[in-house]
Length: 421
Ligand code: EPZ
Image: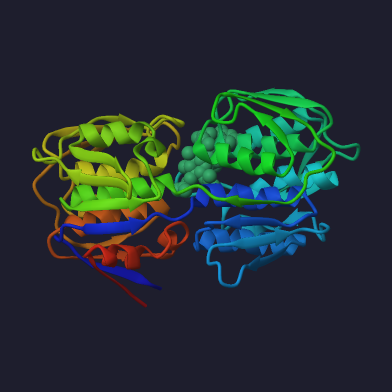
């Protein structure tokens, strides 16, 4: 199994091209099931989760080809659905597989999708996805670990109020509503930039969606959607991760294709923590201010709040700040798996329920550590970049799910980082 070995202590300097957003690419790929016409997506990141989604779509009948001579451009066409089953072996690998549920149900009147089960960061049910589809007239049964959803007469527009803003539920309901009969309103919808990107693709395919990026989405159902071409937005989580790589190594990076506002509240917290963020013609410039890193409290919230997907990285940063930081996780109940690993590197962190108290200190020391999920893994990479002595991060496949060419990008700005098989 691959490992990453880092020799820390080098201030990173230079430019990093930020990739297309994984968490936009996955729903956008699922959305292509809504039409029999070809959809061309560019800026698709070459990460394992995208490959898994491609494999799933191929099983459902999608012809999917990377365009020759245009890296990151994927052409997807589902002339007809050959299967309406998303099997356990793929859904188990990647929960975002459930995003094919809404599109298949809306197009074919039937979808059978394996229940994803829990994962390292929490139980992560899909009850809100199912509630929304039921409100649109779907009949949902659970059989042998699979969700069987049917709507033989098609879906009907409805008013759907989410009890909490779920990204995946908003996406599944939004996609299904585009082919429903009548108008749908989603109240307390998720407002993440990835939802805005999904709505932009759907509108380019002929859908009528208003309010993307706000808590109220209004969708006018159409009888069919057409093909389109669309460029996927930059990955704000990858950008935030590299911003913190600059901060934790006292370096200076320019993150191409990104602006500070893409990070939402995280940009403000990073500045309070002692990073200088500046939008330049080249991209977002990030460096540490003269006073060094300072302890800052954060609480994860839905967008525009502080992203849960940046929490682990922020914790690594706070390990080397002066003063203490209280980090509260409110989105997932078990997203502190990086804490014992950071502790192996000398970090002083105490967890009380959903909050972690980080006592900053002058240095971390390299150690062998174990990755548990995507963002936890990359927080260990950040800690390793700043630590004294070598750090070995095991179970690198977690990183490969969502970071495109991580070692290459970091080596390009001076890091000593290698992969070994
Ligand atoms: C998306 O997951 C992202 N994944 C996650 O990114 C991200 O952490 C999360 O949103 C929050 O921002 C993709 O976009 C592919 P949710 P999702 O539904 O859609 C509860 C990463 O590292 N909930 O917004 O699954 C849920 O348990 C990943 O890239 C229900 O209770 O997240 C959680 O507590 C990991 N019932 C909260 O809502 C439901 O039916 C928010 O989850 C759905 C969700």
